[in-house]
Image 1: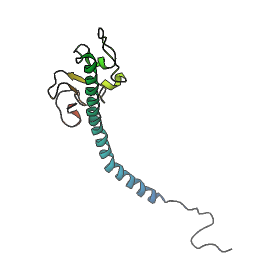
Image 2 (image 1 turned 30 degrees about the vertical axis):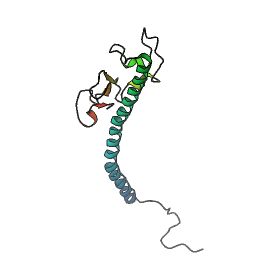
Image 3 (image 1 turned 135 degrees about the vertical axis):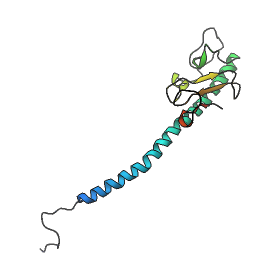
Image 4 (image 1 turned 135 degrees about the horizontal axis):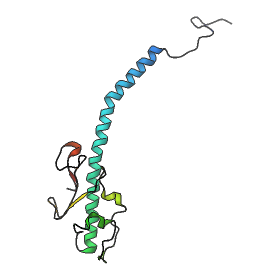
Length: 144
């Protein structure tokens, strides 16, 4: 048998250290470019989720109003959509499946304003910072 030129019997095929470093550098560049875009997308998804959830809560409030002929009082709040308020025999809920449905993506309860500034009723979140106003992810998000 003849040996192939350039290959010793003990030499195995593989990658050199330089090739591995080049691949790692390319992966690092991709992560540096793509990473911030993905994080920005994930952050904006919380705002969009909050807006959709707020609209769902308004729909549940409208069902509550159909049964009770009124919206929940300030004392009852959005809890009235999950648990029956005292002295309300016409309650036919729960109008929302669980307590987490009245909590925004940042872990705070949605706020309720009756009468609303944007409609008959407003359900809103103060955004990521929990303060009125703001921009970006800190912007108030509501059912309007």
